[in-house]
Image 1 (tube, rainbow, N blue to C red):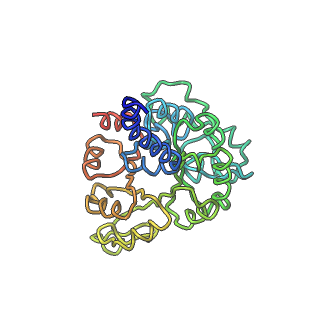
Image 2 (cartoon, rainbow, N blue to C red):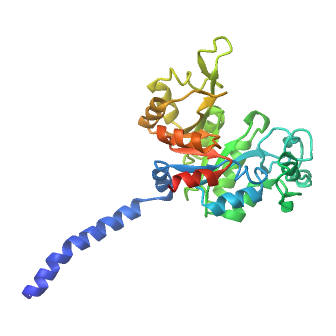
Image 3 (cartoon, rainbow, N blue to C red):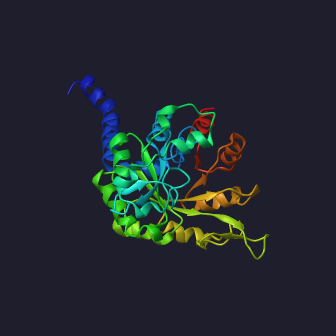
Amino acid sequence: MSRYSLMTALLMTPMVITGIATAATAANDTPLKQQREDLTSFQVIAHRGASGHAPESTLAAYELAHRWGVDYLELDAQLSADGEVVLFHDDTLERTSDGEGHIHDYTLAELKTLDTGTWFHEAHPERTEEEYRGAQILTLDELFDHFGHTTRYYIETKSPDLNPGLEEALVERLEAYDMIEQGRVLVQSFDQESLLKVRTANPHVPLIQLLWYSPSEQDSATLTEWNDTTPGADSIRDEDFERIAEYAVGIGTNAAYRGHEVIDADFVRQAQTHGLSVHVYTINGQDEMKRLMALGVDGLFTDYPDRLLELVSE
């Protein structure tokens, strides 16, 4: 070997080794691991889509949020009477449609006859987008067909007691669209048992435990959690976060109750110390967004993702 060839080989060796190491690292990476890594960065979560600008849970609201480049489209999953996974928040139809009664008492075909857009004009008479009128209830399949793997989805199992079999039906759809292995979905619930059912159906689904803190009815100075999943936020212990971390990758929580703060920076750091991301719902004012970002939270749910994206880009 010539001196030139020897020197070239010696110079190239570190590059080759680095390239091999990089390739090996890439081979060990998976979309699920990447999703978990991304959760350590701040996440913009479009609550029922851009629901401050368009009727919640409609294609119009999700299209706006997706166009703006949010990290997650948030939605509520329920079951129709014939077992279809549909996107709707309330247990009953009256607030956001021209129907009445419980959503799970109607077949998908019956739900599709309802108008879920006109109410938005009545609630926001300043809005002039006529195309919102007549918007239909979406199925999860329709949302997935529309956006595919171009975004991520933050799905709540809504009212599990009223939707028996929801968890299994949801996981079946997630698997059919390869949303789990491709790192495209988080599943959230206030109901711990519902989350554990999802984990049983597919242990790879990343889960978020929702929490709601408010003053005790017996003692307004004492905070309690709605489902007693944890003690009050002001007295939560390491073991409480450790227990959640056994099955979940994060928590979703309120930050205040009727204007009074219920979590602080210590709460956020304590959760994060145990490997839990902290996402706060539902924040629409930029001053409050700034305050919570300063506390170090990992993401915010908002009806106005454009406002939050403006702050994130600063």
